[in-house]
Length: 221
Image (cartoon, rainbow, N blue to C red; front, side, top):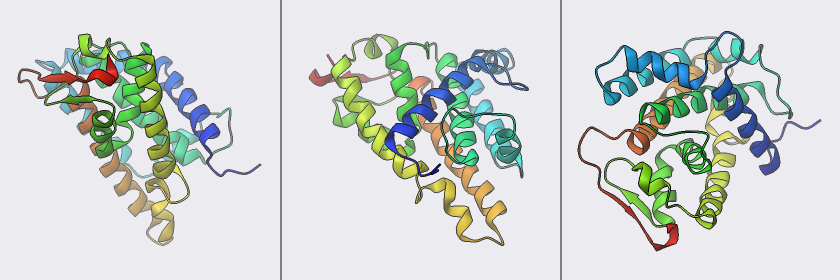
């Protein structure tokens, strides 16, 4: 069976990784437990988020971490284990950050925004294109105003970005271009990418501690 990542396989893999991030896999806690751990060890949501991102970056850059993780997970769809592992690690981080910010990742609107964060720096452009812009964080009340039609538009844009990210020319496979240094290059790149994704999730769900300025355009009403 081909391991080429198609839109259908991507969606199945994302749904699987999201479920595992929320419910946990052997050896790891749930996203909620992950969030609670950092909230209990820090003075506020912003500090908890930054601490979580730092830990996740270190973990993602650890040699063999993703390979080891791939050994304990079974995918319902055939895609490379390294891609599945990155999806799981980053989704677990994002959903934990959403919890820290007071959001419920089981809400379809929040779930769509979690997937959007996977797109990294492109996330804010995706949201802006559908009429959602923010200077700090997205307030819960603003998220609740996002319509089903807008969610569909966001999901379509995110799907395109993630196919590029996780596909044959995506960031996950760049390390393979240099076999001798593949492990080192791949681990470093995963860390950089994970840091970017974490920072975007912090901006969306937690903010920087200042007063939020959120605008939801007519397309999101």
